[in-house]
Image (cartoon, rainbow, N blue to C red; front, side, top):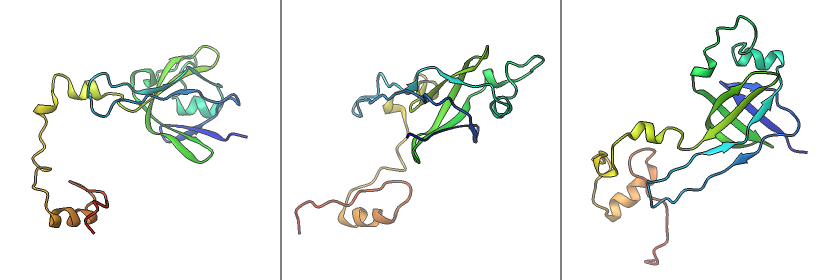
Length: 155
């Protein structure tokens, strides 16, 4: 049996037993164009009291919820393995059940970069000459440049 958990805004929500279908995208790492995010098919969430609270009572009479106008962070876990770590949920409908879609990956890369090209980005903190000392010193780095341990056949 598959154990699926969906967290919206840090709170676990109730989901139907049929689960969630994700469309995972794989992008060419050598190209910055045509980046696509992974997404889910439309997910139906029951209007339980827990889900209503998490979604700010969206869809209930008199609700002034701002949920449809905000980016709701989400996390999706299957059998204890995180599948979506820092995704976003978009609420599409509230009649009957809640209907939501999960987006993950390069959700807002285009918005963040706008008309910036890769040559416009500042890499000055990463520019350096690679030497044996720089290579071995990077093993303890947690930011900046980090080289993986490799066997180059030099003994």
